[in-house]
Length: 293
Image (cartoon, rainbow, N blue to C red; front, side, top):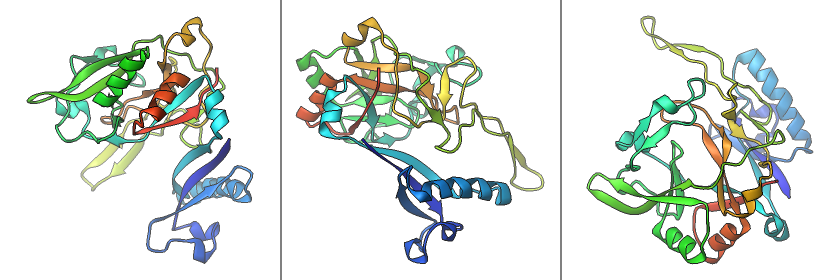
């Protein structure tokens, strides 16, 4: 497996790391890819801290860990992490989907309960075989549903998605299998240099008359519902006896934050048979990484 980190370097400070010909002067940021053993990686760590302390600003605006596997690596893994490549809006809540917030954690917002069908706006769903809303509602196509039925894959519950004028040909995907427990080897944080368990309380002054106070966001819940803002490592799960009996799982612990319409989401996991179906049926919107048992 090869791993690199994508950084979008703030052009305001890019000259501290990059040569002039490496900086995209017509943009706000410059995208670079760095391995952990690259000397630039440690320099980014140092500059990130210095820029934050000196200017209360960000040296990089975004980061993402990219992993590239060999064919045999992926084929030999009995459990895989499903990476849903497409996210869209509006979320179900904006379209009339009802949620029971009394079941949600008062600290991190995880585990609210959906009441009734998922309602979405017609023509908002991407033409992919799997996608998710910004609120973490997972949808799959009719082609996906036919494929899992033909192959007898297990662990999935499917309900038709509702439009204002009737039902669509898309389905909401949820897990009917037991939730998997993540081990302590699973690493989550704000980014690769920041393992903060919560945000600071911020006060923004929009004008002299209208100060706006932003509440503290909780990334790691003391009750164990959420473990961090972003998944930074491959998932590690504890083995249970029924893990070989299903093809689709979600983790008990969640990643993310309660922020507006956003809610913490589980990690999505599947069997090798599930991945084989995706490849053979040429289903779109999926990517896979290795998960460890």
